[in-house]
Length: 177
Image 1 (cartoon, rainbow, N blue to C red):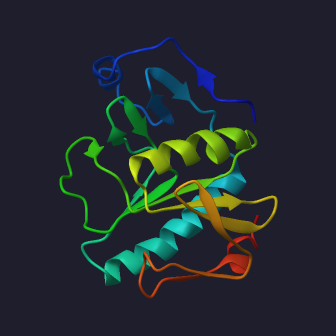
Image 2 (cartoon, rainbow, N blue to C red):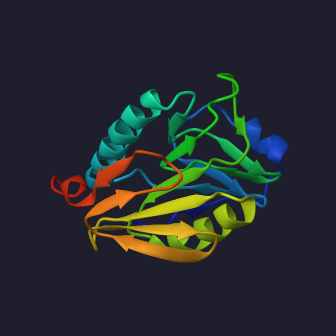
Image 3 (cartoon, helix red, strand yellow):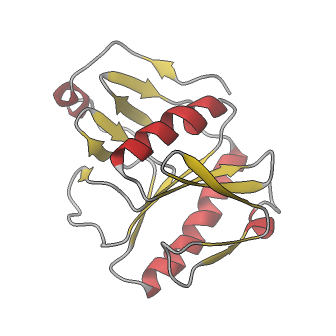
């Protein structure tokens, strides 16, 4: 998979005037980033995670689990589309862009690992995301990040204080990829 394709700088207003799309398009400080289509392994992992988190969210309403492509405006000039994200207090409106900071964001690593590992880590930390999970298919683990620091690399069972009662069998997550 190639690196995300970059376009000339645009304003946030210009970004939101782009036509609706199913592409993974983000805005970071005036730069429009268009990511290539995800691999099947990436989609399998996102699907399985969405099922597990969705089951948890149904039991912990009003929690909401969002999937990319879904615009999340975490700061002026910063519109991201995490692979998955959790809003602990629910989705305030079912219309348009979500303006705010998710409690949890999740990115499944693609071949261009630097973007999710470095740029997204910094952007999410600056926005105040409480927890960021980096799903690493190659290493078969989930890296748990708080702020800029990796606090754990989970290979077996993941539990998070942020999601009371949620546990994830990480080994089982990677069985089909």
